[in-house]
Image 1 (cartoon, each protein chain N blue to C red):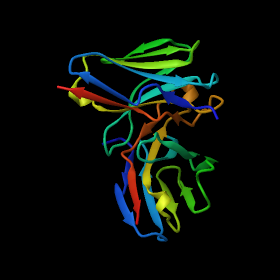
Image 2 (image 1 turned 180 degrees about the vertical axis):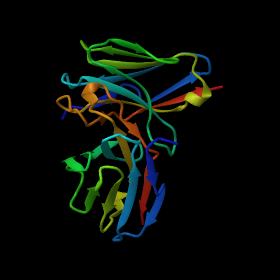
Image 3 (image 1 turned 45 degrees about the vertical axis):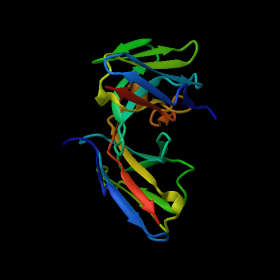
Length: 114
Length: 116
C-alpha cells in the first residue's frame, strides 16, 4: 500500500547546527502534511504543517519544504538545541487524501550533542 | 491545561482481562481519533468519531476492541480479553475540522498498556 517513509532513521548534530530531517511520500493524492515531535514516553507534539498548494512554510526556528514533483518533504530546524532531541515523524492525510486519517512514517531520532 | 487528556497514563493488566481508556478532547473539537503506537513505529489509525458518530474503524480494530463517544465529548476505548499483542501506547487526538481544511490534529500524551 502507499505509505510515508523517512530516509534516515537517526540523525546526530551538534548544538547550534541546523538539522534537516527528510521524508518521502508516495501518495500523490495527499494534500496535507504534518511534522510531529515525540519525546520519550509522550504523545506526538505538533510542530508545523503544510498544504499541497504551498512549497514552503516557516515557523519559529522550523521550516517545512514540500517538493511535490519528487514527493519529498523536509523539516529544517535552525540552531538546534538539546531540547530538540526527540523522534520526528512526518504524516500525510491518508490514502486518497483522507479528510481525517493520518498515515505516519517510522520516524527519525534526532540527537543533539552539547 | 486545555489539551487532549487521557486516563490512565499507564495500565498493566493480565492477559484475558478487560481494560478501558478514557479520552477528553480539546474543548469544542468535534472530531476525535484513536491511534495505536508500538515501540519504534509511528502511530497507526484505529478509529474516528465526528461528534458521537463513529465513522471509520481500521481493520486493526478487532472485535475485542470497542470505542464509544456517547455524548460527542469524551470517548472510551475498551479492549476485551486482552492479549500480549495488545501491549502498546493508545493515543487519542482531536481536531475541529478535517485535515483537508488544513486543521491540525492534536494528540494526547497516550495511555501505555502492558499485558502480562
